[in-house]
Length: 206
Length: 206
Length: 206
Image (cartoon, rainbow over all chains, first blue to last red; front, side, top):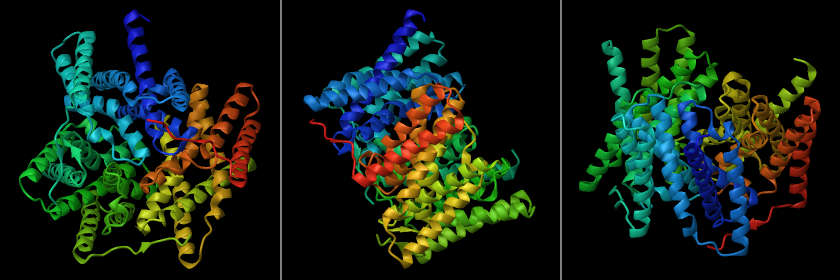
């Protein structure tokens, strides 16, 4: 693999690991056993890409390449072991999780564009890839998904996905458009965490 | 497109819009942000057809034709905007939602029959297409699905689907069988809402 | 069909029936109507295999062969009727449910191995096939999945799946490896129920 692909691949594995570890911490708030936590971790880290691949009728990525599954299981076990001996700050995983979000958004959008999906579909596919895992994680833990009220999680993903679609339409080189779109998602998400940005919450008057 | 197809297509878009708007109102009972509401609206309006297409290994309908996705997003935004300035009665969406249910039931059953699915499978596929979106919506809102205790929602869908299968077996013309089956679903659902019909609720003695 | 295949096929149908009946009893703790219970029963009994087939891009098993769907619906109706006239002990379904778990684990792992999936993927596919239905059932009932804290449910499944992968790698005959792996899952699960074995529960210190 050329160095740039190796880098992207490694970041992808790191993103999977971060989302798996964050899944374990979420599951740890409930009384799950070791296996339950691994299931939540796998759902959180592999769920978005799995839904993307099933919707697009592609080979599911973690079935085609076992590394993602091995990484997710090991990261879940490591987070489990660490959390038993020390207090893990939840913030520890925010940066790698945000990097994973950015990368999954880019990869999901690119996969849809490669199949000639129209622009809105492609951007939604990026958001699904980035954010669906967190939704499944919270549903399994029987909570209202944090993604729906959190600090611009999916919004950051959608902004990056739309930028990627726009740059691709403008024929910007593949690598540059991916870098710019991923950076936008990452910057928006990190800024939102730091400054406490939220979309306004809404309550219907029924 | 011939006029009849244009009509069916338009009703389909209207059904998607109604279920998306109803999803926004449901999400509005929780404290979701704008994005969370759009996710719930998209799940409610596109979830059933997506599961049908993944199960039947067909091209997912909203990926093949972006109009559905655009319609769902616009309907969600419109419902959101309206709900902020005025009190929207939940009943407002009951009629278009019922039309959507009838249409999705017919389209789901026909899609399965076209792939030579056996009769029970075809009818279940109609129910999945019509009712699964509402189940996902309620699961995302962390509530027990209304479909499971509501006014003949899925029951009306199943009755229409079974009628469609029977009429197709009897070689009734495509358009007529679709019209009759859709009308049965619509009439049953509206009558159930009007007269407060429910299946008996059940509580196991464990 | 040769006698052994008939036997395996019959056990598979029995497993589907047991998980459907167990689903009805679970749904009966909520106030669902008849239709809601059938949906929960179908999700519990067919959900795992459906996800397996969608992930592996195979024809979904209950669409290809209607017997599974008919069996699940009939078992759900029978459990519903029985539960209305007498007190059904939940333990009644533990043995057939455990047999179903063992059989689904074996069939899921074998299906993945037949598609040349790597070892960890194949074993996870066995666990998905065996345990995912129970997860969906509990999510639909708006409860934290029992699988995550129960008596070695998924753990027994994973142990059997890993044994099957190992035996297949060692070129043990198909029928023998399936029998041994299924027996391991069944024995582990039944022993865990009898002796009250649990994995240690975990609560993160956040």
